Amino acid sequence: MKIKRRKKLVNYLNILDQPLRFNHFVFGRVFFLWALLGLIGGCIAGVYWIALEFLTHQLAFFEGFWVIVVMAVCGLLAGLIIHFIGDPGEIHLIVNNIRFNKGRLDPKNNPSMILSSLLCVASGGSLGPEAPLVQVTGSTGTWLGKVFRLKGEELRSLSIAGMASGFTALFGAPLGGSLFSLEILHHKHAVEYYRAIIPALVASCFSYIVFALIIHLGLGAVWDLSAYEYSGLFDFGYAIVFGILGTIIAWIFIYCTKSFKKIFDHRPLPIYIKTLIGGVLLGVIAYYFPLTRYFGHHEINALLDQRLSITVLFGILVFKIIAIAITVTSGWRGGFIIPLFFVGATLGLIIHYFFPSTNLTLAIISCMAAINSCATRTPMSTTILLATLTGFSYLIPILFASLTGYFLAPRIPFIGPQLKALKEEH
Image 1: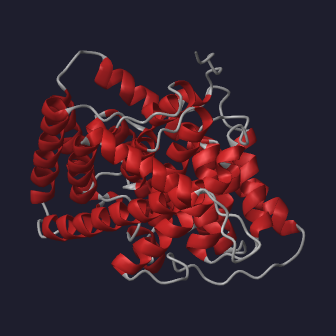
Image 2: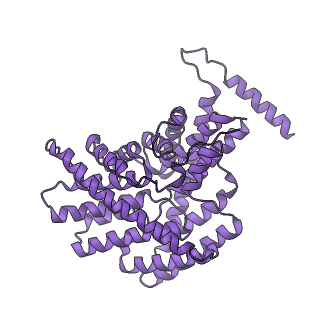
């Protein structure tokens, strides 16, 4: 029965692969495949986001000392899920599989990724939902490719398109999400998988439409920055200087993360013990610095609205970096892109405090761009994403800051598989 259904499916696809004769355009079956993947990816992202918002709202009821208890319990539960259901891996594994495993992302650990990441993100971990969404939608692309008997670069392209659909749904930037899914795979050759850009764009557009319909997402900036007015060529110089400062913070973050990794890996402990310890530490930090809790999607606006003292800003900067490092290394699941944007916003506010004559918006966006580009090696997509999320219409200053972070990044990338040479595939 299963073979008969597959034969019917192949026949239908062959029909779809025929040119449409009522116009001058030719739509192959692959277009409909990319569109279908985008629709599925948008549905997955929408349902995930609704579940995340619900769980976050429920856990936000606990305040004060109870924050420590809640984060410890959620860390323990997430660790138990990973221990008993399966380890879904992290962004390093995604990059490794796309590059060296013929583009295959295994969907068997998606339940573990979904459940553990929901607990980690909703309870207040300093990691966002972008990595879980990329993992789930990317593996959905792999599964769909296998159903339609795709191999080689076609299968890899569909996996990348799935990644792009998940990333786009969260950030609302089809072009930025598509480029990110390509740039994140290699620390130097950003266009190595350029043939996947059209599949990624098509899937991203359909994913964005579905996601927007599900959660009633509108167009416009997410973070409320004051309007930026270009004041001359010196602004490009300022963007580079701010980018250098942001890169220094990115280096500190990378060093801090590696240090905590050594601490957590010093003795072999079960994953649920690590996540429990991480939960307790994160809870203590959140107790003293509430703005460091959660991944920063809403907290960036709160940070911009409040007039915080320089001492508090320094405390938030230092402990947010520590919180992200602990979250990454203690086994909690999620992505660190939006948390790094939060760090960049904090640094921009500190710079503006000491140099009030500088443009606050330019300082914040430049620091955001440099920190993320330094850590993820994604200058092009970072520029487009920040322009979309902040409504900053001048791309060139952001690009200057992004490239500054990219070229001043450590020789060994933070995401290890970005560096490895491609192996021969047999």
